[in-house]
Amino acid sequence: MDKILVGLKRVVDYNVRVRVKSDGSGVETDGVKMSINPFDEIALEEALRIKEAGGANEVVVVSIGSSEAQQQLRTGLAMGADRALLVTCDEAPDVLTCARLLLEIVNREQPGLVILGKQAIDDDNAQTGQMLAALWGRPQATFASRIEIKGDTATVLREVDVGMETIEVDLPAVITADLRLNEPRYVKLPDIMKAKKKPLEEIAMADLGAGDSPEIVHTAYEPPVARERGVMVEDVSALLAALKDKGLV
Amino acid sequence: MAKILVIAEHDGSILNPSTAKTIACAAGIEGADIDVVVLAADASAVAAEAAQLSSVSRVLTVENAANEHPLAVVLAPQIVSLAGDYSHVFGPSNTFGKDLMPTVAALLGVNQISDIMSTHGSHSFKRPIYAGNVIVSLQAPEDSIVVATVRTASYKAVAGGNSAPVESVSVDVELPTHTRFVGQEAESSDRPDLQTASRVVAGGRALGSAENFDLIYALADKLGAGVGASRAAVDAEYVPNDTQVGQTGKIIAPDLYIAIGISGAIQHLTGIKDAGTIVAINKDEEAPIFEVADIGMVGDLFQIVPELTEALG
Ligand SMILES: Cc1cc2nc3c(=O)[nH]c(=O)nc-3n(C[C@H](O)[C@H](O)[C@H](O)COP(=O)(O)OP(=O)(O)OC[C@H]3O[C@@H](n4cnc5c(N)ncnc54)[C@H](O)[C@@H]3O)c2cc1C
Ligand SMILES: Nc1ncnc2c1ncn2[C@@H]1O[C@H](COP(=O)(O)O)[C@@H](O)[C@H]1O
Image (cartoon, rainbow over all chains, first blue to last red; front, top):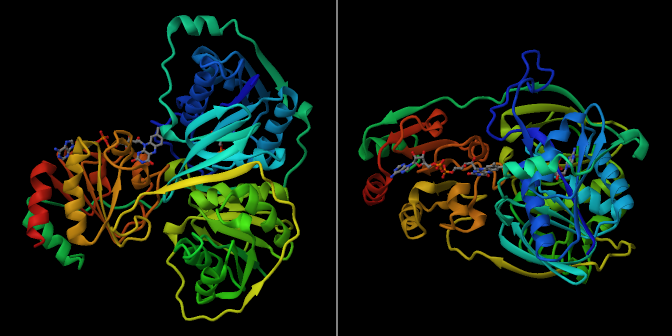
């Protein structure tokens, strides 16, 4: 195929313990470390491997977000992507709008495959890939753990609740990456320098015309009910006694 | 009034317990009128099971050979053609529902709500974000259909004893052939299913090998428990992927969860927040798992676990 399109979302790094703002109006992100969504790094790694094996000519990364997402796109370019697109907007739009924007990009770029993460670890929505596939009228293979491309079809091993499922999809298609698809490479310093010269195009969200979608309003944010620290026991007999006490054994 | 369509999850012969929990969420909405739809090649057995669930008004069956395996792109247009009669369409928030419901929502031109953990009227919901570190309240627009997945660990299955009417419906939509089911490898195990087990014993990286996981299996078997694992244990291939508990694995709510050699990373803890009693065994007294454990024991698992299994007789 000619091209693979990969979505990279800028999210709060997975090691950060996020906090709700004191007035409950949102999540504290000031001065917090931001990274590429971990599943998107996996998606990009897979695209690069397909290209390196001769299965594609170009890997294009796309992000929808503020201009700060340039950082994550530069990291993607340093990993090995050829080109980056940033759809700029002030605030991250809702998922349906994101999917519609991605469809506009798909229509421009005509990729043979789109690989997204299975979920973004900020909102934990796990929806964008499925929505894009539906709007595009193309196959979806979510939670991919292995991808094999042969001609115009992809065979995808999916991680599902009962075990593993294999499906076959015609290309172009949307695949979403699960954790065990691969282990992303580390970025080396010379690659970071090289990435500075790679093309990064900005497109204003309004220019893509994604239309309005019925928005779900976030009315309040709160911390979860905390579990309390319980008792510590010294030995197995005390452990058993504590379990018996609760009627659990 | 809320007219709610619940999408049944099943394997062709048995209704998945996730369905009764999804119905429980729907039934919490005042004045809810709930239909369940079974899309299958042969829906009879599953529909009969669904008809027994309380709070269900009707069970609809859509039979088509193409529905033998639940492919989202095949099921979604059929659901969309029924959705016009409803104010809400709900599915479970597991790999079945997560795959399917966004597809349905996109075809209907609406956003989707993931992981409902509580309902506050017909259009207000709460859900966890940031691996459960934050709970957000949502208000869905009243003038469009609500498509959502339900965090099954937040709900107790509705009871049986009902006998709702079963009606066969036919839908006239073209189904795509660009996506084909090839096969499924279910991990066969006689142990209770992780998602419904009342007791779960889970192991982490500390087990060190697949062989050592026998310690976990032995304790689980003594307790009649299901077996779970951390991502680290799954990645190291000590156990199959379907045992992973957490943000990106299974979200569970057993009465008893025993975490053995698991540090308690936030991504793991979000999967067990609703467990009744959490027991932690870890050699590091600073391990974050102890912050949420009801009963904690500091020590070497290779000593404690065999002793505990033995003591259970
Ligand atoms: C995007 C993303 C999603 C993730 N999703 C998940 C998820 O769904 N589920 C999940 O579990 N993780 C998930 N993780 C990984 C998570 O961050 C942790 O890395 C993982 O949970 C660690 O597993 P562990 O506790 O087994 O290993 P470790 O953190 O290495 O902990 C091992 C523990 O064993 C103890 N130990 C060692 N030897 C012994 C002994 N002999 N006796 C007793 N105790 C001993 C140690 O003190 C330590 O606390 C995710 C990470 C990312 C980035
Ligand atoms: N703003 C965004 N920019 C780029 N990619 C995105 C964006 N939002 C979502 N995605 C992609 O869609 C995947 C699933 O996200 P979500 O549906 O929000 O959980 C992510 O892993 C990304 O690959």
